[in-house]
Image (cartoon, rainbow, N blue to C red):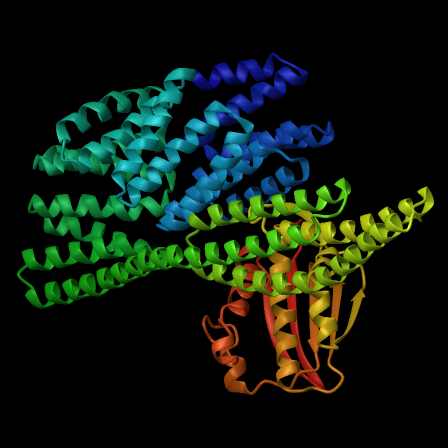
Length: 632
């Protein structure tokens, strides 16, 4: 009956009214018929592109990504998410970017990757706060609550669920039913099963009336779990089996394993061992297929319980051993993650110390040129901007989970600070001489308008040069920047930042750009990779006393990718070093090296740009190549 209302509206409308009706119907079908939802969204996408309507195009792609996610078609979901990001970057659409990262978060969560899911959802929250769409904010808060709930961080989960519920009630959204179900899950964890049942039954009625099958399946599972804990196994089986059947109909591949296992456990408690066996086998098979480690552990544990009830204690013991091995592995991974967080805090303190030292140097430089006239205030303002950006960088670092990336960026920063200090020495000397010449001219009554204008012009040129150097350095610390950029521009920017150190080492530099290479992402990450490779090449040639040291950088577009080659005259690397070159903490520099630069560079290229970073020994030197696919 509900579908007929939508179809009648579509049939009896034209133009923008008909397009809106198609979109509303597509949204309605996202859970109950995702394939039809996607078909309708593609119709709207064609209309949007014909009329060059960017907002409509964005909304259609959001519907497509959501529909394919509900259909459990992850490759197709990721395709539309990537197009959504490209559209959002190109047209500066915060909503498009926020939705794309929210869907990426849901994909990671379904794959039991809580850390990656949280990272994506926090990025989505930044964009949703910018667009200030209350519905998106509500959805994002709810998503953050679910992630923290999965990580058993109940205080954080409760905080975000309460925020989501508050927004839902303010805007009158029916999503409050789903949010209350999530709050009910926390009540389950607090062993308040009767209160949780009450919340879930209210929401279940709504989901069934509105035909929201995905939410209905989750709520049925929650109710079954509560009855299981209350040891009412007949009722528990009834709801868990309905949840499992509905998940099968919806093809929710990443949820079927958990729900199949719950049905099996319930059947074992009821003494129905042979009925339980097919459910356990299906649960373990799916968990192993999708590498769902917690679900694997649950499946092995249920197998152990099954064989124990069958009095086959050898089989029960073997599965119990599998459970222990897997849980030890999971526990070790969690412990390493916690240790990484503690190490990150320690390294952040080091970073703060380095920033403080740099601030002192900047203040000393400011004192040296304090005798100049008011036009030199521009340089002082630049110093203050640098301080502010350093502090922002420190604050960002305090929230980062990836300690290796932090170390790598700090190491590159050290190289750049040293280069800037050298580059500033000459203009500061020139400014001092020019200022002195003005004073001498005044003492000898030789000051003329032409003379003063000329001196001020020279001083301004030096300040402009110094200001430009700091701007290049400051822009390097914008980790969340996402935009479309040319690779050859990033090569030029990288060389500008370390030009002095290459000149000091008497290294000849050659660049060759064979065409435009435009990609989308964070340009500063490409700069970081290039600086790591070039600095390594410089250090290697200096260490080996290579005669006539030489670096050549080539940027070349290929069929479906962009290629950057960095060649240097260094000696060929032996196989044992080449094999470990991209491993974390491996270095040939002894105490002078961190061993993380090339490791982080490969991670950036592979994880952020889905490309490849490789090294080869060539005749007369060594070459690093970066291949980045071009998204169409």
